[in-house]
Amino acid sequence: MDIIKKLADEFATRIYQPDSYQSASKIVEQVRFSIDGISNEADKIKYLSIILERNNLASVKHKQICTTGEDCDVEKRFASISYYLNQDLEKLGIIRNENTFTMHEKRALEERIDTLLQDLASLKAGQQVIYEDLLKELEELRNLFFLGKKHSFVSGFYICSALCFVLDLYLLSLV
Image (cartoon, rainbow, N blue to C red; front, side, top):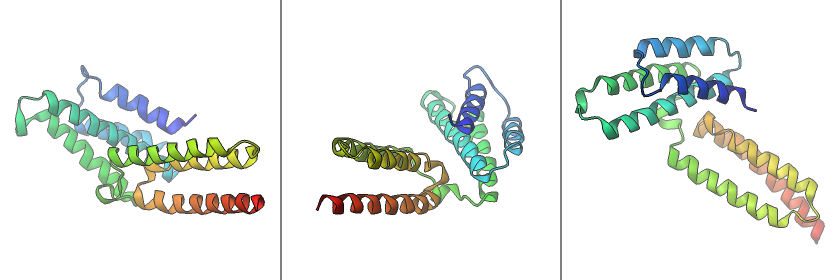
């Protein structure tokens, strides 16, 4: 169980209820209070990223039904939350605008990982140990998206290098 994801989801669900309204400063204050209790920087980044993603989703949903237009106070609240939480991410070394995976990129990468897993499932007969190792590594790669493009790429590069090494050993054993 990923406790950081669970905590962030619970917080976001509570904050972004349709009938709940809190000021941007109050929400940012609560998020900052929540991450003060987290000592691991990667977990802080993950928590903030999840809250920002949920903030963006709530903003998109609101835009679909909003009739106020550009002067919408609710939209200003979403923008303020995004601004201040992005500053907190910058303090942790993550520049979200350039470094963040879009929802489309995440889906595309997840589809590629799923395709690899399906291909590996067809090869696993008689190679259970290798299959389980590869499955574990691919699932770990899937869980690194919250780090952003730069950090996930570096981690993913090492995982992919390890996977290639294991596959090379397997293929050599067949020859």
